[in-house]
Length: 163
Image 1 (cartoon, rainbow, N blue to C red):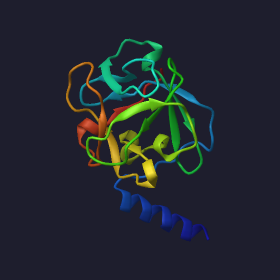
Image 2: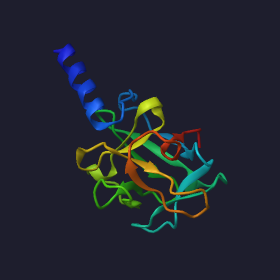
Image 3: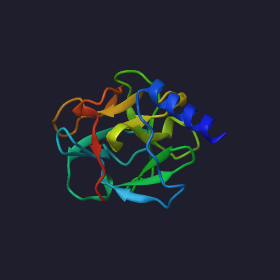
Image 4: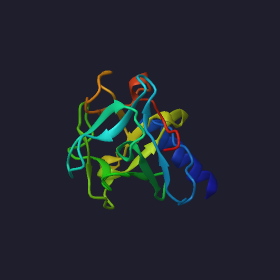
């Protein structure tokens, strides 16, 4: 049974384009910053309003740039903003250019995330697809991040220093 489970998880990781990394088994939440490897900018909501987009901004240490990682079963997690209390989500499906925003935390696939290959790709689990990752569209402050097909380029890589 264990070999079958390992084979199934390996096949899923290859099929989706992002590798699964082990998360602590329902560990307590961590507080981290999500920092673009490409440009050093931090993720934060544009405002504290429900439904507002997630943008990149010069890191400044505020609670708006801190995220709780709430671990879920099966290598999934929710990313809950410390300032707004809302979870990062994708509303309209997995496609290139899909909007990443914040919404009230719920047990829905729109809010499921995982860290893939090298533990640096931030993959969206919307509708169980796991094929698209959060990407920066440029280097200017205030740009809204978006989903892009996971390919591991530097615009999709994120470090997670402690908040």
